[in-house]
Amino acid sequence: MNSAAPRSGGLFEGLYRVIMRRNSVYVTFIIAGAFVGERAVDYGVHKLWEYNNVGKRYEDISVLGQRPTEE
Image (cartoon, rainbow, N blue to C red; front, side, top):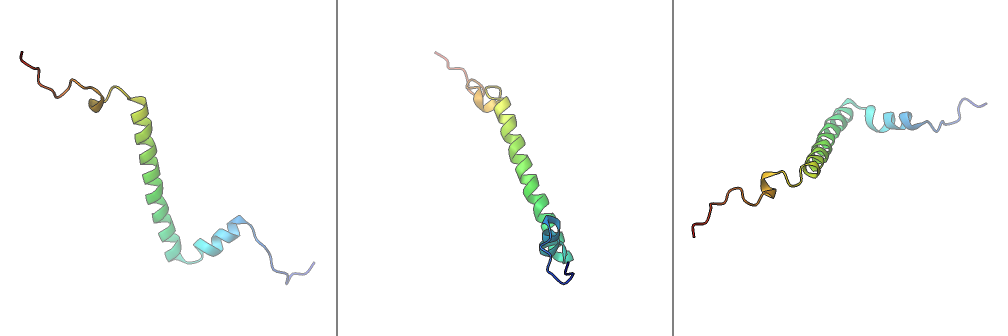
């Protein structure tokens, strides 16, 4: 076994080499990931809420906000 042979590494070693080696890149990755994750969760929860409340929302009820017609 040759100890001078290059190691291919694994997933975590690759992540370390690309993202975590420099603190500025790591912090930027964390902040960007938090922002993207927050947007994804917000979008998903909003769509789930709309799906579960179809017909119950203010926009779905046609008689709300209309004045009665006098004939």
